[in-house]
Image 1 (tube, rainbow, N blue to C red):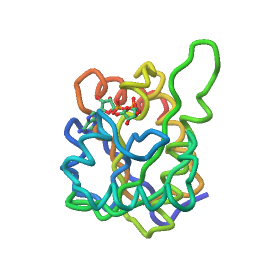
Image 2: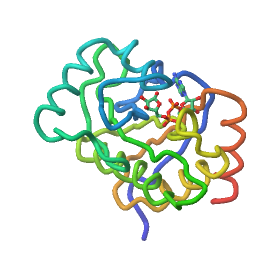
Image 3: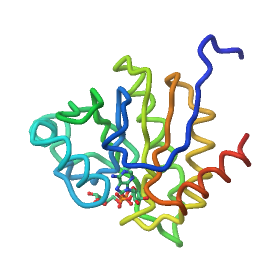
Image 4: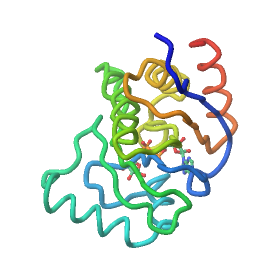
Length: 177
Ligand code: APR
């Protein structure tokens, strides 16, 4: 089905907190109260306004935390972006196939972005840090998810923090072309 605004997907190396997009996706944890990695960078650079809205979410819709695979938006505070879309990746397990949950992080974040009216979204390599997901497999899941997402936005970027992740994503998007 032809789409009037085909999605453009860009892969780049960089710091996602510096990306000038409408929405930056955060690899959060279920508490939504911050952490290390990209979560820590976003809260550090974005400032307290983000955490304030996360606390409000915990006090209302997400009293028990944001489940893995789901996504929710807050202000982006002092970041160049307008929104942060927090999503919780699954922790990698060799015993259990959690790839559906990781795919859902991408498709749910795109759904939220579209509902916000965002034209551009930047993703980190969700679950490939503290949550130990092998980066090649995460890249494969990311490529397939954003390519087949029903709800999407015109400009999708993957901002990779190191060369290994960038190469893995470049290879995955080649294969999934
Ligand atoms: N910009 C872009 N990517 C980044 C940045 C940054 N500033 N900082 C880290 N990354 C990359 C990491 O190198 C990794 O490739 O983000 C990817 C995801 O790693 P994590 O941030 O560790 O996220 P994840 O593996 O999903 O684990 C989530 O870690 O930080 C905590 O609170 C977070 O508990 C949650 C868990």
